[in-house]
Length: 44
Image (cartoon, rainbow, N blue to C red; front, side, top):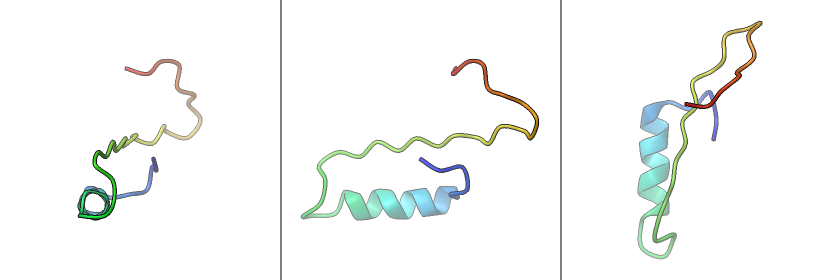
């Protein structure tokens, strides 16, 4: 989980972890950054 990762980097990580000899499943969570000065109050 990281705010700064691009979708291309996420796809590369997915390809790596699902390659033979690694994980069988992969869950990736991409979170949009919260604007400065705001606090998230709810996960939707």
